[in-house]
Image (tube, rainbow over all chains, first blue to last red; front, side):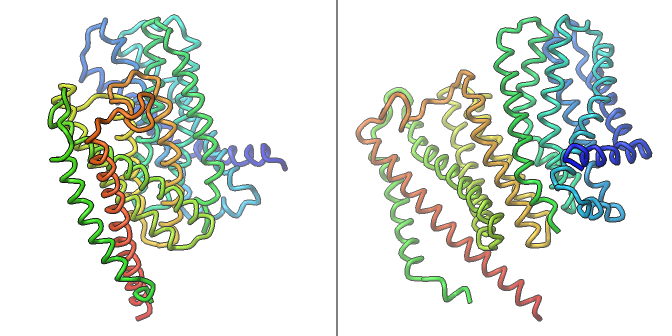
Length: 224
Length: 229
């Protein structure tokens, strides 16, 4: 079996176990909606100010919902020592990482598909004209922070305090990604796309580097 | 035994050298160097601010190199170097983050600004705090060293990227005085003050590094003895 085939098998295992428990998806989704409600109450902003605040609110929510899901991503493998089973699979260790990342990206896609429209409804804000660009930035931003996040969740899962450690490790690394994503999203909302291309390029750069580093270093994480 | 490897004569010499160069740096930057024309005396903080920034960056570079060396050879010595250097780097970066706002308040009329330089330094500081957190959350020595080394590499790779990536923002922070596009912008009397401060901070780093490495080695030895008992 080639690399893609092995990843497919591992990914199928991820999907199956998530479909059986639904613990990650349900937690992430409910959390994202709760944050949307809390911000709606807490900020109580006038309609013309929404455009300034909403990009930040959306990205902070997505980042925290992502962290919530990532907390379970590798910790769940600790039950019954499943992680050793995974490590004994006749596959490259990076295949495990790729499968986990793809699964987490799929979960985030579902969360975004439901939560983003809810934001527009709850903040009573019209859908922006440039929907294609909004989808592009959602993809690039989510990709950049989930690839490094999945790696860090593997790192944190081997410690005693993984739930506390993961946000501390992850947030400083994803702050630049969030800054860029908020800038582009703000541009989409205001319709002023002059500065957007620089930040899009930066998002692609961060995505590339944050997927490259785990490939080199992942083998060291899962040593026994 | 570890004591045999140490050379107390060198350490004593280093300690005195550090002591006198710190005194010299204090004298040169607080008394000898001329008062800056527009900023006044508050500019004198620059000598310590820049010196700690350089040493802080250098300390993190040492973490990076030691982390790679550890992963390559699994020699516990490198792990001790990485750990002590990260600790010192956090201390020196804290000095940068404290002295900066003290200077900025009278000059910029604000303690803090979300400027690229400031933002990246703050992110760097948080990254190495997280590095320390990884270490304190793990008991087994081999695992702790391995995971910390992985994060030590990631965090150092991240810093230059973040730094370069947001360079295109307009920056408030003064241009680099040494090696910047403006060339050497320091007035005559400021040059010795700057370089002696830098020298003193470098010695201080080396001195503290040797000290903490020795402490780490001793506690490793004690742990080993305890396990044997």
